[in-house]
Image (cartoon, rainbow, N blue to C red; front, top):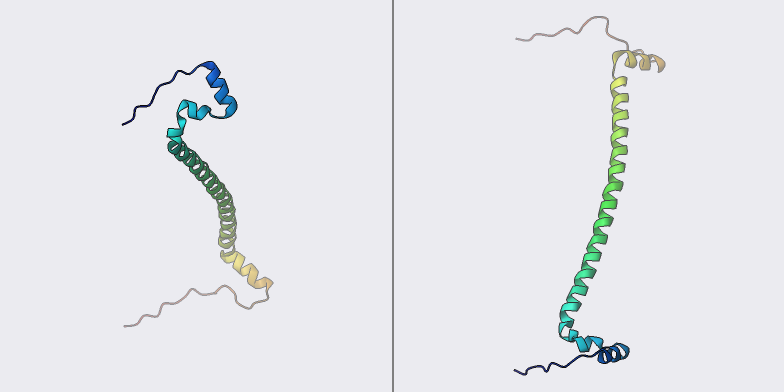
Amino acid sequence: MAKEKKRKVSIITVIKSLLSGKILLLLGVDRLLPYILFLFMLGWVNIFLNYRIEQTLAKVEKNNEILEQYRNDYAVKRYEFVNASTKSTIKDMLEERGSEVTVPQKPAVKIKTR
């Protein structure tokens, strides 16, 4: 195993490496490049997943609004149906349309069989 030589780092050396673009080599970060790239990739994955989650949540909110509208429409239609199924309403509707069907005069008779 080769031992790395430790060199003294002076301010002039740091300034020269900054200007020449070799500061990362001076600090020894080149050995950590795979880890830095991995962290960079994880950051992009995190951003992408957060974006997809936000899109899904926006879609859920939109669908909840639509579902609430459908619930309101259902309640109105159910009220109209229940209101229209009363005897007096049916009788009035039949009279408006000129139908000869009326409310029975006698109650229904049960036929008993043996």
